[in-house]
Structure formats: structure tokens, C-alpha cells
Length: 155
Image 1 (tube, helix red, strand yellow):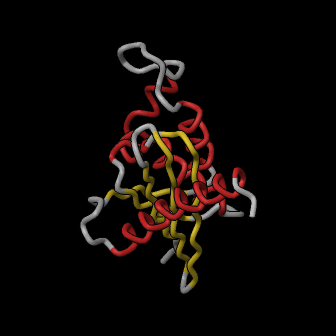
Image 2 (cartoon, helix red, strand yellow):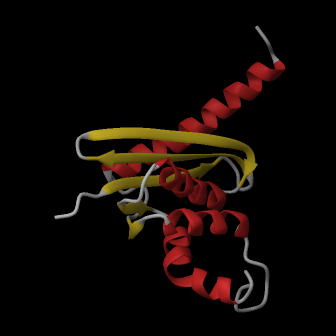
């Protein structure tokens, strides 16, 4: 049996667009690592993508990985749509520019470094790891906003 890294991801946004955060929980054997971050003006879809990009980019060598996300946008984008987007010069079937193509390109590059299995779970349905990823994403917003506050209000 091949050992696998488990990555659970989520993105959050307070307003869309608005302040956003991403979170990733990585698990390998009996070890866990939590990652999170935020941006002052972004979208939920960008934060969902960023969570996966950051999770995969943390891995230092090729690995078998299962990425679990509650975003159909991420799962379908990387497993169904991205091939056509690349063939069409990062254009959709209706010849429109692919939204968030900068992040899709990063995700494609990170996913190519690993043997990735993609899984989807319904968000806010009590899945323990997805709930933790959601908490991390919201922490990313909170920490980013606290840092912005400290920049403007030095103590």
C-alpha cells in the first residue's frame, strides 16, 4: 500500500469580492501541519484555489496526494476543464478569458509535481477535516485584517 499525503483545503471570503482567506490541513502518517493566509481584496474562488496551491507547494518532494476540497469549481476545473482551457490558449468554450488563469496555471504546475487524487466533500456538512480547513481559512482573514490594523495603528 502506498503511503499518501492527505490535504484538506478551503477558502473563505467576507463579501465576494472582499477580504479573503485560505486554509489547508496536511496529514502524513501521524503528523499534521496547518497552513493559512489571507488577502485584503479577493474572491472566494481565488481563495479556494490558493488553499490547494499552498498545500501542494509545501511538499518538498514528489508524493502520492489526495486533495479534498469542498469546491466544485476547483475539483471540476482541475479534473475536467483545464485540458480544454490549455488547448484553447486559456480561453473558455465561449472564447472568453479563463477567470483566475494565473492561479489555475500555478495549480496545474503544482499538481504535475505529484500523483494527485482529487476528492470533493459537501462544505459545512460536519466533515471534521473540512471544518478545520474552513476554520483555518477564516483565521487567514482574521490574521490578515489584524496585521492591516497594526500597520495603520502602531502601538
